[in-house]
Image 1 (cartoon, rainbow, N blue to C red):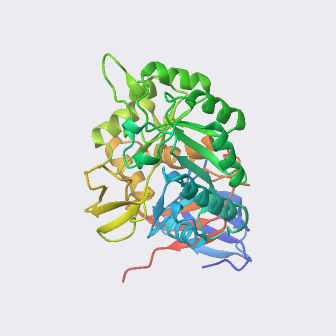
Image 2 (cartoon, one colour):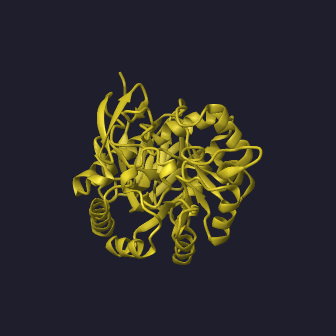
Image 3 (cartoon, rainbow, N blue to C red):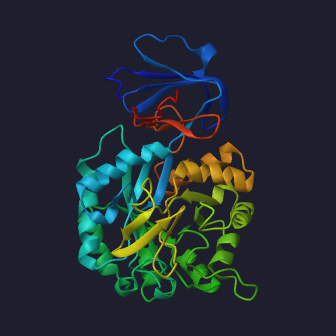
Length: 398
């Protein structure tokens, strides 16, 4: 599905722009960019365009940005192959994801290095429109707290090591954009200060930090939290913990996995009530089994059993998810009663702003990348356009 270099005209749909919703709208795309948006009665010409007319009840919304995803459809960032990243970039548009951070996991150093080098090379020279774009890397571990390891292999966890991180960042050609670390571990605050200076997101995660330690991390420059509630010190009336700090500090933007498994729907509602749409980012934290059948799979060298929507290690520990980001949006609407505009804020706007790329992604606006998701009246992804090319279109059912 390509436009053969011809401008694309999406017409007759509700268009969710940065400012408002256009009821009977159109979007004109040329090359990889959005060049015109408006109401049908303002449309002057359809000449020399590939016209895609859609039902009036369908909605055009900005492409989703997943800042925390390990794998999908049998592939994982840690496979350290071009083929694995090809699989991920081809599969993700089906759930409305148009760009993402390829996410690593705690592992033996050489394995992490291989994954980082591979992803760095891919980002620099092997991407193309019509697939989800890898915006950079999310280094999840090994600089975490073994007490809150979750599915991070405990034997490879180390304290934050700035010299090692600098080596790794060089290997990726500067493409590590987000680092999950435990700020209470030796070297944690020093690393956060360095990340802040370099414009890299410092995320508090897999951590046993106290409320005070989180405050110190914020002061050092941390402004992000990895999968709220999961693998962190919880809320207690005598020790507010990481969760209490998230609820009280607007500086912290928190990821949340809204699959109904990782976080109880009522806790999603509570988080939304505290943080509002400006303070949360929807993520999947999905592993390679997403889009595949129940069975045994690998995550960070560990066997994971996937059954009935849950991915667990042998001891029952949750091991990532098989959540699709489009479903996370749908679940969030259902659990919190938020508006679609609020859901767009959490799935598209906030991640783009955190990554400092809102000038080109995260909303439907003239001059931005043509990363657009068309959703039907059941809030299901009908079509996804990645940088001006149709990457997915739902087959019509007879």
